[in-house]
Image (cartoon, rainbow, N blue to C red; front, side):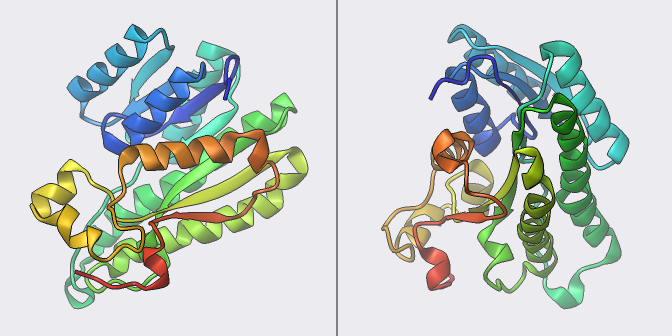
Length: 253
């Protein structure tokens, strides 16, 4: 797919899923504003890889838990590249704890970035897209934990379920402007954090996923490319499950 002339914001792009999305969009010709928070070295590595392949990328460090930070982010994209076509609101935080042990600080941390940050990122991007008058695409990074009850992930799962509803509601409101809003129901995915938590992560999940393998960051990037494509023009307010069918069963290791 040719994305020359298009501009995307990809938040939390310094590692794994976000990096795969940013790299894939840039390879298709899209100019990318890639955010990170406290991961300058990883972000520079990403930018170097994109630029070496002939892509355009601007790095921006930001704590995207406030409306102002998200407005500034969209303003930066428009000032730098002249427009904004796509928002991939990938920034989020994961915390696990039994419900009875989850404290207010943990809840606030999860809700401030996963829900509030995503909401105001979408609002800022949508305002710019409406002003441009040429439509756009907004994609949230949700999770299978927002669709299937997972013990120990109550607060996290609730924030991800909120993103599913956010996509549905915003899709209904923004469709008239040619803006589609969808979410990614990201399933078990091989990354450094999961392997750190469980060195047997891949084998444990391979045995539970109907397609027989754990997801990879590139699987998520490929789903993003589909949702940005003309073929997905009528996909709006939807959460696309990227889990190999796992959420139909919901078995846990």
